[in-house]
Image (cartoon, rainbow, N blue to C red; front, side):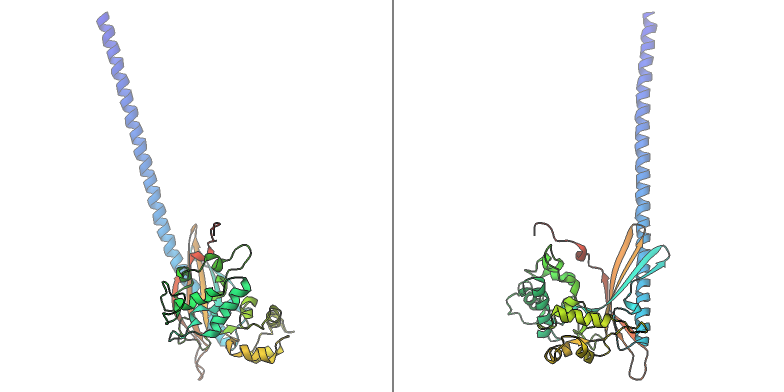
Length: 342
């Protein structure tokens, strides 16, 4: 009897070990299956993201083509004037397959062109430098920021702010972050001051890039901040009068946009002295544009910006044409706020 009991206890012990081994094997299998499921889900996510990114690439390209269509159509309809009321300047949305695409076009002449702070020989363009200094001063920033940007671009290596200077025109606004002494709050603003980044461009980069009006400001689209940068005597009151004039509608609904620079004489507060000071710095139409395209599929998005020049057609009645200057990913730093400790 004692022997039988020992045998039975031994067998029960064996069954316990077998059960433990079975549980261990089951646990391992569950872990393996879980890892396979996770790996499969991850692979699917990666594959989907790659597919969505490809769809967004086609989406941004489609947005670009839509923008070119609007720009060329406008050049045929109204080749001599560009205003903020025209079709090309209104945001557009299209659907390309599963991609939701938004398109925004802005003429470069509504902003101060930093690339035109120097001419093609690398020599300072003092009128553009003065515009930037006024913008900085009006926003409460140090005017020497303009000198830092100038020394970074001009061919002269003997300026006060030549440390790390490339002595060549900027390739993009994000490059401003490389300039010594240029704080991010100057670019992006803070609680008490505006940032300058939204009032700047670098396109076109060269005087010969399709632009008859390179560096000039379009009085039909520029905001009051940029208009005030044209001259010390161009006050906010006069700038607002310019905007009010171009925003006024005629009886037939058309805009009273400036058809020529000479129309500035009709603006309240515009003196002959002020007109003479700014007449060679302003235009009424644009020759260069930034096309901002955003494409999104599910949670994956792509933002791309294209810079183009547009001609209104030859003197012999040729068709309007657009030429691509560059295309690049939208600089992400523009949407990043300065850190609290700065």
